[in-house]
Length: 245
Image (cartoon, rainbow, N blue to C red; front, side, top):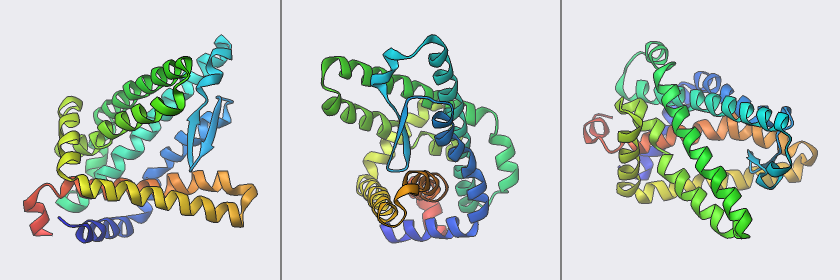
């Protein structure tokens, strides 16, 4: 499938179920906001919340417990949001009932995605701490983080659409990215351009509110759109669905 049908299916799904998708994205907003609200050492950049790994050694036991708790809550809320947005995608393309599909996914699939994200978060944290000690955080950490993020990117989509477990979903995530590499590269470019343009405009027009508005824009508008478009890329590997649409 070329880029044009992908964008058309993305736009159709996004606009047809806009308010439902916005509702599903609310947990994702909470996932980004909660760490900052409870004093976790974080910073905002390009509409996302990042952990200040160099501040972790200075945390007390109480603050460490709070940080771990908020990270777990945030990961679960983000898992919940992404799983349910993918269910909307599946329901739109396969003509199944949205509400029934959502109810069936609230337990096992969300929890499975949560465990995937938790393992990835632990790997990223170890990477950040280890490269920080080596003095190579600026060079190695982004490369490793990008590789880990790429590997798990399509796991929630595969688990929801194909109803498979995490291990098999990882295989299909890698296979799909390799088979659809040009579309995936365009997807990354689209997300980066959208984030960059939004941040430049907000800093120019509403500078004092720019960080807050970027988090709102990313979690409620851009993230759902990118999840929907990523789902369409994944579904495009099924030629029967592609031809019938």
